[in-house]
Amino acid sequence: MRHIVSAMPVIVFALDGNARFELIEGKGLEDIGRTREELEGALVPEFFGDNVEIMEALSAALDGASGKSLVSLNAHAIALWFNPVFDDEGLMTGVIGIAANVTDLVAAQAAVEASRGDLRELAAHLQHIREEERTVISREVHDSLGQMLTSLRLDAAWVVRHLATADDATVLKRLGRVDVQVDETIQRVRQIAQALRPGILDDIGLASALDWQARQFAQRTGLACSVTDDLRHDEADLPEEAATALFRIAQEALTNVARHAEASAVTLHLEETDEALVLHIRDDGKGLDPEAIAHTR
Image 1 (cartoon, helix red, strand yellow):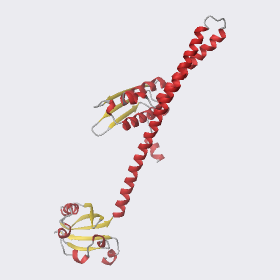
Image 2 (cartoon, helix red, strand yellow):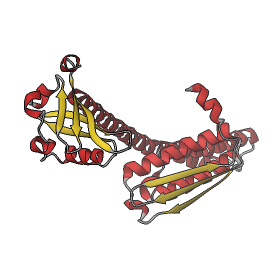
Image 3 (cartoon, one colour):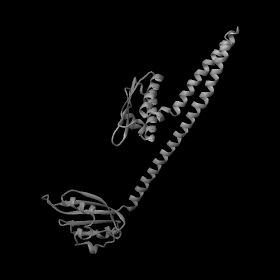
Image 4 (tube, one colour):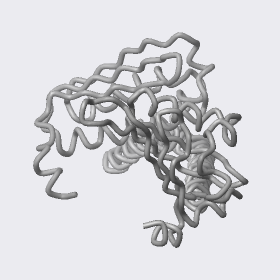
């Protein structure tokens, strides 16, 4: 058994009730810079007493509980497992365990976490860019097109007033239609500008923007929609990224409610805790079938 274990990239060991190495073997000893000859017969604290993680895991095992720990030895990440051994009478007689070099695994996990962090930052950056673009387009649509259409409506109204005494009723009727169309176009331009980036979100805050969105949703769909909040700070003090993200989430959620939920009412509640800003969205619709969701995974 020693011969087999000595070729494996792990360390297998057995301790007596006093934490003395009765047996230790494995190619992994090379990683921690120790040999079988110097450890067998020695007490664990003699070599590893200054390692808090090892001593805590060992103490738990000597108390009769299995223990595990991730420690640093000789610049390597070592995963340790301790397991108590009991005799037929239930008395703890020693500890057996195994140690494995997981340096590459820990490094890979750290790289994955770093990559996830980079992806989150990239996603946040892209979202920020999109919101900036939406803000610019919204202002252009609202200011430039809005002003042009308003000017056009004023000119049309002037023509109507000056032709009021004319006998050509057809011209007056056509100009009246133009005036109505211009007015409808102005309203549509305002709606598009608000959909791109509601100015109220920047000017007043998230809760007010959600309230505006709820009123627009109710008017458009005929569904009851209400907003409440439990904010501890002024709306303007909320982080811009968080406020924008929650507003877009609410926007998408309400769209899904209108399309799929077959609901009659929706409620939104904005809550501020010590750790987070939470948006609860609930409707009285049909919901989703958990079994159907499970089958799609």
